[in-house]
Image (cartoon, rainbow, N blue to C red; front, side, top):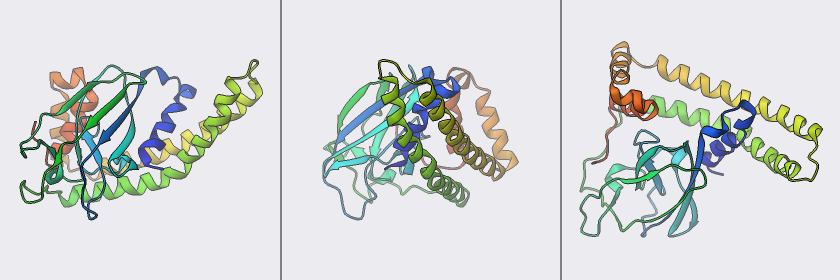
Length: 247
């Protein structure tokens, strides 16, 4: 099971920590043209992940050779922009005449479903190859390592979801069963949080002082006051010298 689904499972249990109302689960399905066997798969990249073209947490789930899906856990009532890639910006979606297309957009709403079609993939050699700094490679390695460790805890939370929902659907739900599942879920959330907190600590420990100052400066802008999350992701990735898509 893809990691993004597992993170969505974590969010499903957030009622236990009283933040459920802020979450919107958006389902996205895309129909794509053929791509090569050497490609990494179909990814979605956008303002929700700092425009990272091949983010392993945003690799889409294959339904068949031309259909892919993903569920994005997002903040409610926010405007998001995105594009589809094959894991690199030199293999991003383009128009049939090979011209760049505008970013796709949507307003997040819990339960929202989106269906897209990719007309064509940009061919290698027609765009500058993205340059990932050694520093960002190290950060990505830390992220992937933490994601692998999280998989066991989050898969366990999915296993708890079924009895939790079934109990609530009973005519007289058992408070004892609910309390028992809550206890197990809180334990798993705690372990997942500890692993994520460790990742953030290590990532920020690897950032140089001048990079921290650049990010802080961006977070003092009016745009950050309106949308802190997206402003932070943009500032972080620009500071790490990640290449951005044409907007």
